[in-house]
Image (cartoon, rainbow, N blue to C red; front, side):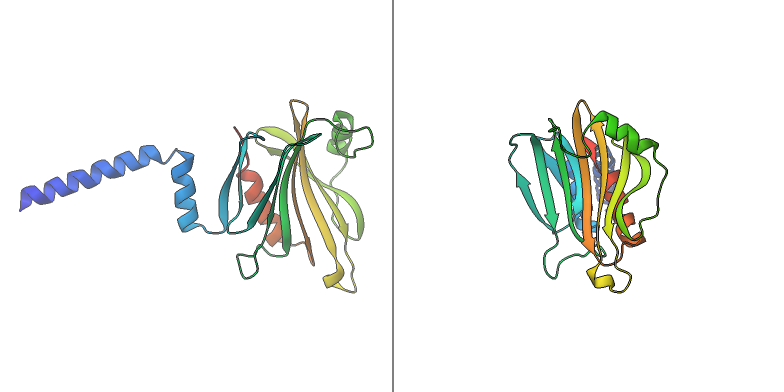
Length: 198
């Protein structure tokens, strides 16, 4: 009986040690995160060569690379599904070639926004929120907002973190109605922290 117990303990220990080695694999992490943290799901883009943690259970719509777009994925909440504060949609867009009139696309404009002072998102306009880093690249977080003081329900905001790498523009975006609070910003930080270039 003692030999069987030792044998079972040895097998369980071996499985545990092997499991710890496998933990570094993204597929196992995706499985564990999917089971224990249903607020996130791992999305892998072959055309964009990136992986990202997006809201779990949300509908994902991908765009076929066309024209200047390398890839685009849009995540929208399902009715009755997981909600991330007032976020109504999240997206990741990669563009390779910018047109002359496309805003937020050139290296010069990126540098201008990087050098601007941080602003509070209040009222209506385009605001520079802060400089940050995403996937090892310098990034800038911008917010476009129409914050209606008299009616929060009519308020609209869109937050975009923009970075450039190898002549490509990367835009990670969230948008929604109502107040833009720490709940939405914290969730956006979680998405940015889970973004990886492959």
